[in-house]
Length: 258
Image (tube, rainbow, N blue to C red; front, side, top):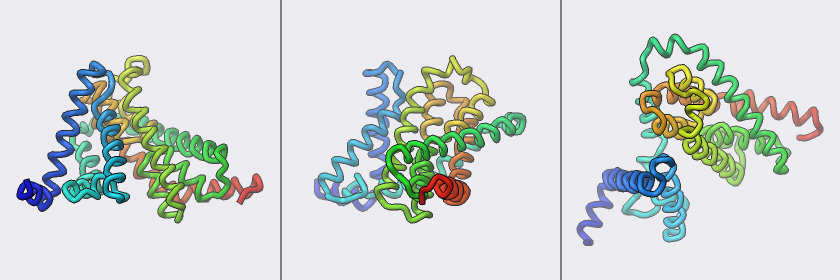
């Protein structure tokens, strides 16, 4: 057992792949057996991951979840920005260029509407929760866009760690909500064409939520929703610490804030 532990620890990235694979298998079984496939395995896997991260933090006393356990240190790289972005970009290779060009205008309009709605909603919620400084409001508003835009914006604006954590939490709640609700409302909103998927991805923006929701609805629509959701994330990271922050600061100056 000690020899096995040493080998698995030495090749911790491969161990991480096996660990995540087993976690996804458990989520798939739970989805089929317990919910009849109504809850997507990705949502269950995220719940498993959050639970294991909490247990690992309690066990190791660290701050990086299961990556603090030497045997599973490879999850820090596997779940890092490099492989995450590689996975997101890889979905673009399944997009048909003619469909994207034909519906590109709708995707752009949905991006503008989706970002404006998310930032505005997050800012209002931050204000109602008692935040009055532009940095905190902007960071939480960015988190309402996605859990990636939130910490990127907060780091750029030098926000406190507690505010950044709130922005991540807001984004995670949004992602899980989107992936759970999408299969149930797909027929009602006619989410059955590449154009509809692009608009949906632009409005919602959260990559994980959009991809998982579309995968549970129609896997062929995933690349189109992922395309605009990816643009949403990138555009949000650009606008959050710049245009949105300046706008929030200007509004606070007008209403007597900071």
